[in-house]
Length: 150
Image (tube, rainbow, N blue to C red; front, side):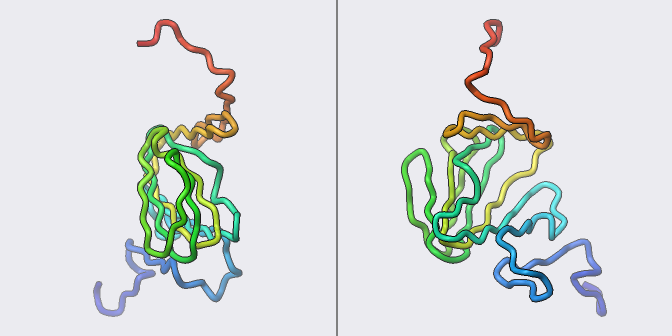
């Protein structure tokens, strides 16, 4: 960095995921990827109360996600069962049904993922599939099996 230049003057942006911004009201969801100008990766910090979920039990068909525990003792549900996590734990949810997960508080976690032009998210508990970024949701019970598909 050249003398006299700060983070705000460079294309590289900095956000501290552990420090609250005193100029803003407390946030329960913080889009870190957007805050640092990320185009190919996303990161979101969730401050979860006891039992609160970051989202439904789901998996991505073509996107890997990572979970980083920043504080607390959140519980993660996977296809293999539930685990109580602790600060510093990192998990990888691979693309596909084997990476299905749900995260519940109490705790502060950061989910990191790839950003794709098209993402397909399946929620097995409610039998839905969502196409992103359109946000269109389909019921898996309404699926039509193509007979000519390989």
